[in-house]
Image (cartoon, rainbow, N blue to C red; front, side):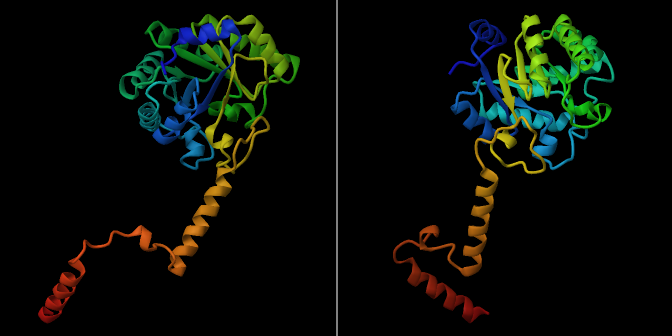
Length: 286
């Protein structure tokens, strides 16, 4: 399969073809996603919760994001990969934002980067885009600044709040972003954004009026149990299957069933007798 480019994503939007993408944090998951024909993979800073067991995304570092992005690129060499810029990798200064965005391309092989925020990050978006990097904006529920939002809460549920979300969307496009992710926003508001923006608009928990959907892989597969957002649809329950397998393995080890004869490497023919002689020799020496 040929790796998509940002122009392919624009063409998909024009055709009305929805893009399906998920997060991925490791090479095996990325490989399965590529084999399944995913349009894009986001190496999200959600790895803080889904991989590292943290309570949020704020502690995640650039080095962690680069490490996992390299792994995903290895597993999915022919899929459009987006690196997620973690907290304080772009807020401190425009110069740091461009440098860190570039590291995702130079060191991890990403095709694009994503950063959170609307009007407050337009300078960073413009500078990163001017550096020749594909930029995905991210508005609505922005987990890195969830403290200011009062927690992980849906956005745009009143007309006043909707106005702010729409203004953020327009500002992100005007700053030069190539695509926009809208998270946990009322579908009526997302529909307005989708009608008014020229760039692709994708959703996670933002309803059907988008150019495609994103889901967190750990939610999709049913392996993240700390909480389940309203917008998540579980397509599998691998968490329960993993526990079942672990219990079965534990029980077989304790009972002596595993390993069985089929799980060992027997000595070559005629060598067992020689091994017995070796043991006798060792006994006589000791």
